[in-house]
Amino acid sequence: MIKFVADSSCDITEFPGVAFEAVPMTISTSEKEYIDDDSTDIHEMLDYLHSYKDRSYTACPSTEKWLAAFDGADEIYVVTLTSGLSGTYNSACLARNIYLESHPDAKIYVIDSLSTGPEIRMIIEKIIALKQSGKTFEEIQLAIPEYMKTSHLFFSLKSLHNMAQNGRVNKVLASAVGMLHISILGVASEKGTVEPISKCRGENSVISSIIKEMSKIGYHGGKVRICHIENEPLAEKIIEAIRKLYPLADVLSYPARALCSYYAERGGIILGFES
Ligand code: X90
Image (spheres, rainbow, N blue to C red):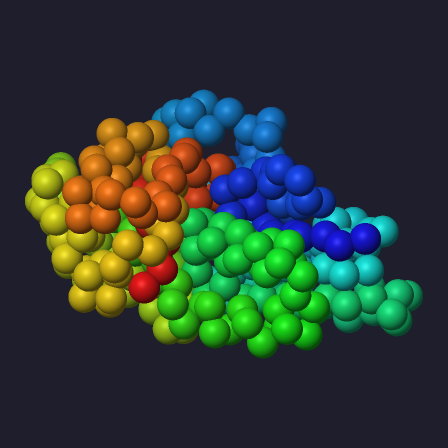
């Protein structure tokens, strides 16, 4: 059986027509835990965290959780959140080694996305398309690193509070963003970490800066995936701006699941695209 697996930072819970599983990350405080699966009410989680004044944490899936997702499969493709910010890639690699001891004929390809959300989704979509066109495991192992040279991730965030609290960005940068109407525009760096590009004042500036930065990297009408944290209007305006330039572009927006919602915070958007 062929299986496609990711951690829940991919923001999708199913893929029609294939065996796909998202292994949940968790978000917690000292009094409550949210498991990042279909059961989590993200609006409620964001409200709760806003009113909760003490600190909150996240955790990546245990090796056991990855193993449970591999169970029964003998050709497995795994895409994880960046190893630059999380232990999820290491945990998945450990699970691969353990699984291979009891399933020596299985093939498992674990991919460190060096990114999150929409770019992970694009990598999964690519693997599935390659598989459906008849490519072998070995061919896919060669094709994906090439594909990842053409996939990129931008984000626009209104707060870096949760990232700073959990040591994922520095506090000086975070405190500069707390102001009303200021968003920080950034890019996933080569190492899979947060790299700020500019501060934008107001929504129009966010939209034009994103379009400008995309074309700088060589966007010319390829696939775009946008997840938003309770900010569908901004995602739709970005789509509109892209379609003005490239009416036929394959562009999609959808709400983020819990892990990306926690770190990108209310109002944030994360955008993956192909150059
Ligand atoms: O506990 C854990 O292992 C999870 C840690 C997750 C850390 C950051 C997740 C970022 C989510 C924020 C904006 C995009 C940043 C992308 C940089 C690669 C989304």
